[in-house]
Length: 344
Image (cartoon, rainbow, N blue to C red; front, top):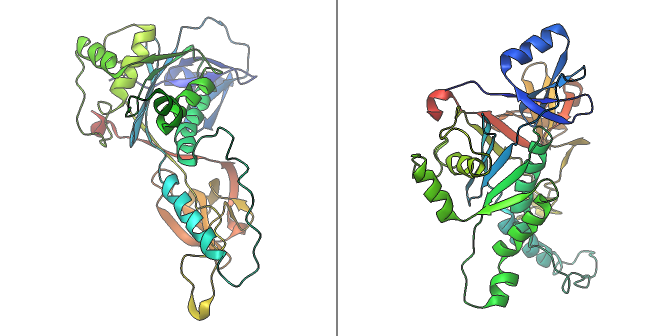
């Protein structure tokens, strides 16, 4: 397996063709470039004018899924990035709980606002769970366009269960409405092509690639194999990828602000819960702690902060203070490089 590649941007942060780690290290030692992290990926920014502006066509293959999704950035010469992302879920259940709690509060003998008129009833909008699922894909696509000069997106088209009724199939299926919204937003970044599932399978078998049946396995053959085939269909090149190192990405999810917990505490008191701020600091902020090193901000309790591991999300401590935490930047997802022995 070959080495991975390092994304390169110019002084205006316009993406250029990626480079090898060895060349990036030479640039850093000579002062020709400066390194930085973006979304968990190490990149370099050129401090001088690039020697050449020629760019090869780069395709991004996207294989949507209900639990895991594959995204591959490739050209005809190299495979630059293999991503297995966890799908965004849990929003539908959270909205049900929010609605139930809101209706329960209205029956209590406490001051509350009058129910507002349903102002969105006649407007076309995406359901919250559908919007969250497809916005997550769009956020990753925007991030990749900031790192690579993307020429085209190739997406495996997915279809909802149909009932033989045109109006229902096209207008009322959240899957159909969500994917068309996604295609429209994605086309603002680069041209979009779609492939049917049977077309992806036929091309994969033609190339002699074998897909694993373990959908939740953190291996290239689970989801990135189809994403690579999609990218290959647009740019061509070698019939096998030159590198299959895998990066796993998980979105950071927070509980929305709940006015009260589900059940009261002692003496009928209900504690506030949820939100996106912890003692005035945005949750998900990457900080440096003298004891725990680099971690991101989680919840708060008793005037203390919770710190979590950036790769696994495991809570490191619940007793960190603001004075000991030096903010670095805001992160939106967890990034983890799968060991090569596991990815093979």
